[in-house]
Length: 117
Image 1 (spheres, rainbow, N blue to C red):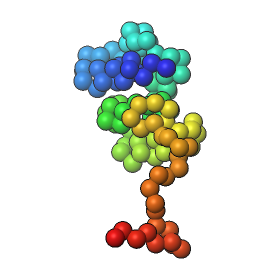
Image 2: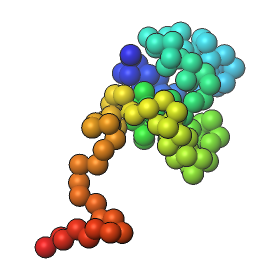
Image 3: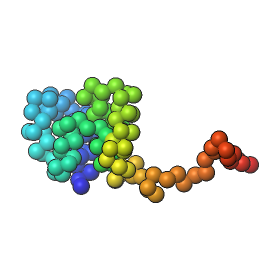
Image 4: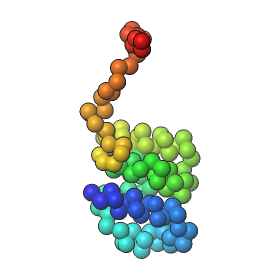
């Protein structure tokens, strides 16, 4: 996986209007300049926010890419959640899920109260 190059592509796309224009016309020309895996490239080409999130793309960078694609904020959040449901836990980056998604902090439930004293 080439998470560094994937995030570099998105960062540069987010900041460069000329690159955005070229990407809209011919994404292949832009993507060929980055060393992306087949899965990463497919996720970018498909605008698959959920898979990009699971692959480990930083949420700040991904948020701007979603806006570039015209995706509303709440739809963006739903697509990230759906990505975890469809593709499994986040695989890399700062959002990588550990422990199989289990919580490491005690949580209050309706039948159990956590004492915070």
